[in-house]
Image (cartoon, rainbow, N blue to C red):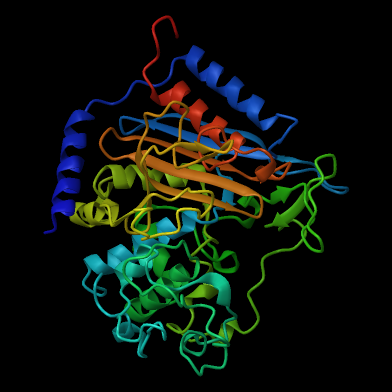
Length: 459
């Protein structure tokens, strides 16, 4: 067993002992104060949010859960629908962490291996043509060190076999923009959506069924979750539970922001356009193209179900009387795999304004880094003044902004999902991190209002 895995297992064991006593829920006064603060963020005229769902977990217990605003705004023919506990969100890149849960389950079952050449699963040779002697492994795909890039696309039609995309000479390989020409697989970090599509394809080859159904069998059904990657085949969830995602920005064309303009649906406006299967899905060949199901960003899940996933990981893979993942699997997944060495050149330190500083297997490690330079803040700090580190994932796309993060040692965690933004987040940069100011305000409110010990004189 690697030292990092031993350390992580020890952390899980210690946290289980230290958090054996259930955390006390927030007092009525604390809950009212936190609710008032979050409502003010939702209603802020500078960058309003159409809807927000949050969960705070302290000492392994949910101590606060609330929804604000609407999952569907009023239209000319339909009234607004309020957010509720069943509301599901297209959770953007938090999907990658959940995809990793399924991949790690297959590793646990012996169907996949982290350090095996993935060519052996795909059935064809997968190599960066600029570095043909370097095998690519599942570990590299989960840690964004595979040397793949998104410039050649990361989601393809059901009729496409990814072999045609990935291999030189393939019909869709083009000029090979999906491969780094400067960095071989294995060391250099660059955040890439396409990695998750390859992971899903490998999972299909190992598991023998479509990625969306495989995830249901491996993770969602054993946990009793309604979550799913493909809405047109989505029982037992109700499509009406899916929140529409909004921005005050055009969906097509010049995509200009208009802070004074109307909210414009960007995704999941199913009251107008019900989900449809992509053309050709009935002829899809399992194991050819897992990008079809959006493993990088198309999971629909509620904030409450995200909390159940978080609690399962906090408890060493155990959930409501059932072992979903073995403790060693969770420890391996959460162990540090890559840490930024800006001077050593092992990653793009400017990626997303310097957001990424460390990574596990399918999860970001938040190191509490904050750098302010030339008036712009950067880093992965989550709360003003620092003090909270953890593992998890961020998500943003189509107006949605989300965070899933927890400290395995203390079993404290935060989840938020905002279903849209009323102005360009780049116009509202953060004070202490790479995130926008409204994101900082949400995490800071959750931390101080639900997780941090109150200061003397506070309720």
